[in-house]
Length: 347
Ligand code: NAD
Ligand code: ZN
Image (cartoon, rainbow, N blue to C red):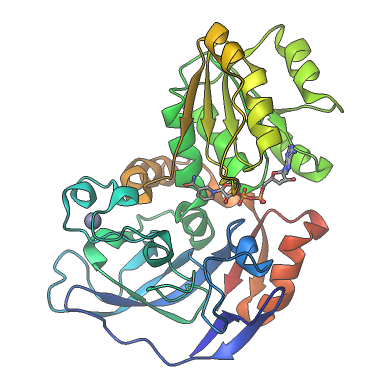
């Protein structure tokens, strides 16, 4: 079969790789019908992945149809349309049983928990994908959820929803979303679905602020977003969601909220330490949330909201591209060219 593989910094290749086989009696194989490129894939693309290995298959946002099932899988059938949660759990430990897969007791290392990082799991930017512990890691798609929507639901949408949920967005709240990539755009949709009155969007790229405005957010058009947010809201926001993964944007999130404001960080920051402004946080009675999303936990809610048209994950997909053109697709997404938000590859 064909798959996208990492061959070194900025080198993605459309390669021949062996077909996957069932790895255990509770596993499954899906024929991938759509697969996304995520902001996190750009770390690998740039040469800052989890491993120095090369040649491994990449991607962790796969949607498809079940073509093979191990004998222990009871709740799924061949032919089911499914999405693959971007990170996999064992489906047996106490944490996985309640969906908190990010804390799976048997998969302690991120490199082995997520597809396509060069660890235990192969990449989902491929024609076929073996999925371990299928009943926990595959989610059957309801009618009315398109492949494009489902790709966003494998990772970006649940991450955004999780960030918004942890900030306890309540009806009438004012929310600032910092970083308007696919995750940030889904955070805007999540905030409105939870009843936010106003959502402001901050990004360096004008095209991305425009995409936020199309979802009903108010773009912050200023060189000094901190000041502009205060002026637009007449004070601090109730909630700030950081969807970038940088020190400067965590700082902006903290300054954007008012007294008893809730900051929720979902951007993945590579730095070891962050210089927290303790007196400011104390005076503000700041709430600071940070974490990794357990996709399986969020999905039942999100699939219902999407099937009912209350969330529109497909709205962030801008570029459907054949997987054979994967190298160019990565370059386009990396350079933020052509108004790109979400790239969905067709295998
Ligand atoms: P993306 O790279 O497409 O979006 C990031 C956006 O931030 C870009 O539009 C960029 O212009 C903007 N940005 C960068 N610096 C900025 C600044 N100083 N001020 C304002 N905006 C700035 O990525 P994405 O796919 O939307 O993902 C966003 C983040 O979420 C990434 O860090 C990703 O690794 C992370 N993520 C976290 C989880 C989780 O479970 N916590 C899961 C998936 C992804
Ligand atoms: Zn587990």
